[in-house]
Image (cartoon, rainbow, N blue to C red; front, side, top):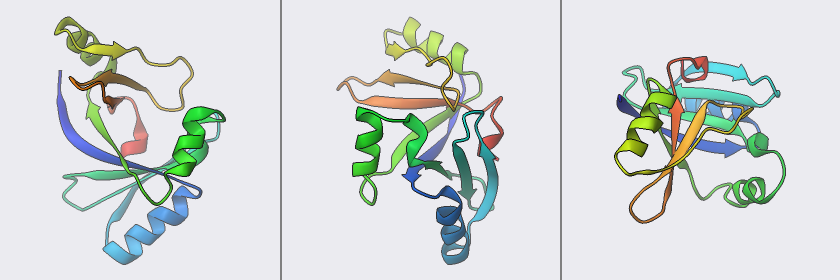
Length: 136
């Protein structure tokens, strides 16, 4: 298991516009710009050091329903942090073997990601960086 990078995810109406603002105003670099097979856009920015990254995802990433409504309601309030790993399936299996409550990846999700719960029941998103160009 190799979890070494912190990423923040902001779900916004226009990921490109958000990334451009961070690049222009904060001097960050646009590291990647891609669309999932479903057409959902993701744009990643970060400092030249690569020490951390912000992933701007289209607020429609979760389609319609309760989760999508929550993301829309949180616009302007709440970033979400993600932990990036080098092998999602292996990392989730190892966490599960350590007694961590793991939610298996959703088939057809626009990003290869899974979730686990911490000791207080908070959901933490784990993304697979190995096969995903979106992180630049």
